[in-house]
Length: 166
Image 1 (cartoon, rainbow, N blue to C red):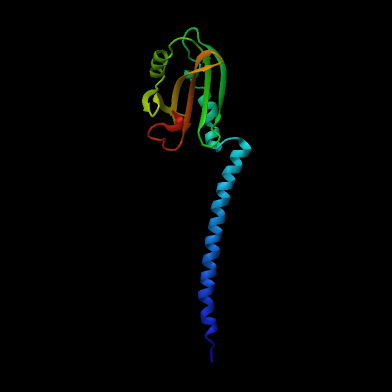
Image 2: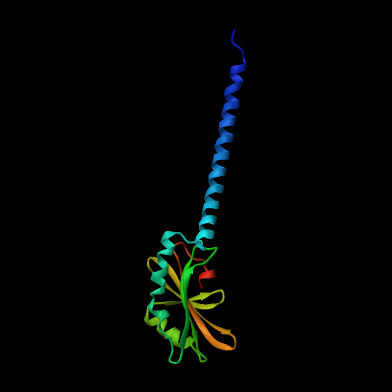
């Protein structure tokens, strides 16, 4: 006579296998997220290799070196946003005059198209195979007036309003 006990075992085994599979998938997802977080903490950015490769391409954009007469470059910056996978490059200029009309003309000459963003207008075009956004904004530090000009990009579809990129 065959005991009914072996018949119960396969159901338990299938359930155990399913639970192990679910646990492994959960561990893989958590490990993947942790790996991205660790890479971000070690490198100081959320960018991967393809995005990091865009940084020098963005920094070489001619619009960043263009400036109105009398503007004095004070700083350069580039890298990837700490928590987001967006490479960027930019410059800070000291300047007391109006720079918006100058950059509207310069951007158009270099193929940048106006883009209405959540916080004003910026410009967009394809740079290095990615969608890039150019923004120019006034700043004041220690009583010194000026502006910053930045180019940020993404290989992914950009936010409709430009978001952090604009």
